Length: 302
Image 1: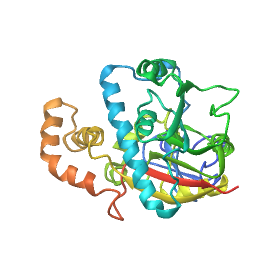
Image 2 (image 1 turned 90 degrees about the vertical axis):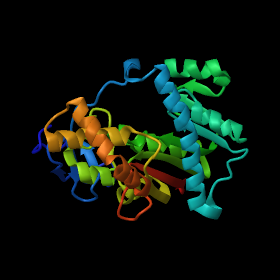
Image 3 (image 1 turned 90 degrees about the horizontal axis):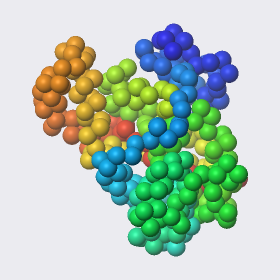
Image 4 (image 1 turned 60 degrees about the horizontal axis):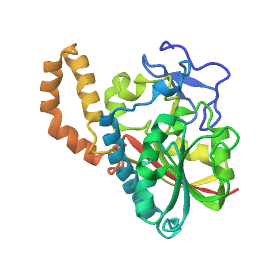
C-alpha cells in the first residue's frame, strides 16, 4: 500500500467501526480518523507452519517470555486490586500457548491452566515436557477448545493479528463464566518508540501479519463494543529484551548515517546504549512515554 492508499473500502476500524483513514507516512498502515488505531492495508500473510520459529534459541526466548507473562499477570492483578481474579485454583485458558511455557508457569503457582495453539510442532515440544494433557491443537469445531466455562482467558500478542476481532472476542466471551476476565497484551500503537522512529519503527515491517495496532483509548472502545468492560490498560517495555534496542539502532543508522553497515550500527548502538535503556525503563511508567507492549484486563459484562 502506498502512502496515499487507505485500507480497502470494505475495511472498518476494528476498534470503533470508523471508515475514514489517514495515511501513516510511507508505511502500509493508515490511522483511523476517529480513534487513531493503525490499520494495515497490505494483503494478509499465511499462517502455515512455516510462519513459526522452532529453533532452540527461540525456545529459550519463549521460556523467558513465559515468566515475563506471569509477571505481567501479577502486575495487572495489582492494578485491578480487589477486583482481580483469584488465580490459585482458577480454570484458565491461554489462546496461542505455543510451547506451553506460560501454562507451565501457571501450573507451578497452583493455577488449573490449559492452552491451545495452531502450531502442531510447538505443541509437540510442549508435550515432550509433560504438557500433552494441558496444551492442545485448536479445533475448528471448538475454536477455543474449552468444554466448560473458564475463569480467565489469556491472549498474549494475539489481537494485532485480526482484521476484525469481533468473532474472536465473541468466542472469548462465550468461553468465560459470567464476570470472567480476559487478560493479555498487544503491541502498543501509542509507543514512544513509534513516535520517535516514525516509519522506521519495527512494528511497521510486518503489515501482512500485524493487522492493527491499538493504544490505550482505542482498545477501550473496542472492548466496550464487544461486551467487555476494560478495567485496566497500561503500557510497558520489556527491559530484558534487546529487540527494540537493536531495531532502533538499525533504524537510526539508516536515517542518520544512510547505511546498514554493521560496524556503523554497532557503534551507534554502543553510543545509545545507556540513554536507550533509561528510555526503555521509563516507557509505560511515565505518563507521556508509552511502552512497546499494551497490557489489558477486560471483564465480561454481557
